[in-house]
Structure formats: structure tokens, C-alpha cells
Image 1 (cartoon, one colour):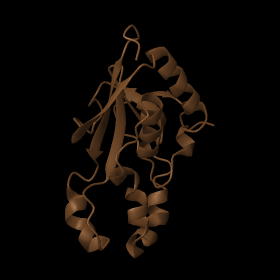
Image 2 (cartoon, one colour):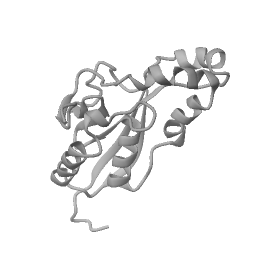
Image 3 (cartoon, helix red, strand yellow):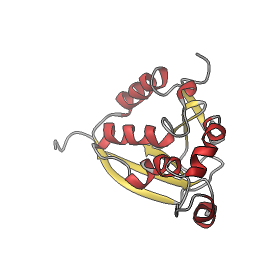
Length: 168
């Protein structure tokens, strides 16, 4: 690495949307243990970036109504400048990560953070997060709930939509 190129820290913020209830209720409801219902965000350049039903949003780290994250994972550093990153997010927000493209099981905040983490650092987010939808859907109760859960669009309050809202 060139010592003259600035390095920017990249973190993964992990939130349990169930606030611990998944750990207690999942064995009864799904027949298997889930440690949480995960929402994730990327923190870089002094802001937190996430994807939800409103598109790509940003806020100060820990600035949504979810409060501080349950876990912070250091993903490493990037040489990608903030300007290039914001252009990248703008492009994603106009195509792949528009709000109307949000799908709770297939195309969600974790899909977004995994893609952005790879863009910035070459690393993926932990598989226990990305594998959660298939774990839930592999159960009979998950299949029963799917039509209801597919209609849910999670957008943690407190973020500023970068672009790509639900308007097509």
C-alpha cells in the first residue's frame, strides 16, 4: 500500500431488531435457535449507511432510533475516497438499492452491507447474518409467515435518505 494514500476505517454495526426475543422465542416458533434478527449498517467517513424500505440512508453512527449497535465489527481500512464512495452509493441508490427493491428475505440491509463491505475492504460480513433468511425460511413456520413478512419494509427512523426512495 502507498503510504501517501489516505486510509479510512470501515466498521460493521450490528443491531438485534428483536432485542433478545429471537433467542428466547425462536426454539418454540421455529424449532431452531436464532440468536437475533439482524439489521446491519456500514460505518465509514464518519457516517452510518444502511438500506431499508426508503432506499439508502445515512445518519451519524448509532443515530437511528435503534440507538447504539449491539456489536461493532472492524472490517478494516479502505483507500476509496469519500467522493468515490458517495458516487458509488448514488449509483446503487438509483438502481439495485432503490427503496422499491427492498425485500425482507432476499434484498435487505444485510445484502447491502455485504456488497458495500466488499467494495470498500474486499471482506464480507459474517455468514450468520447473511444466512439468517434461509434459516428462517427452511422451517415450516417460516414458510407460513413468509407472505406476511414479505410485505414488511424495514427503515429504521432517524436516517437521511441519500436517494432511491420508493418513488420509481
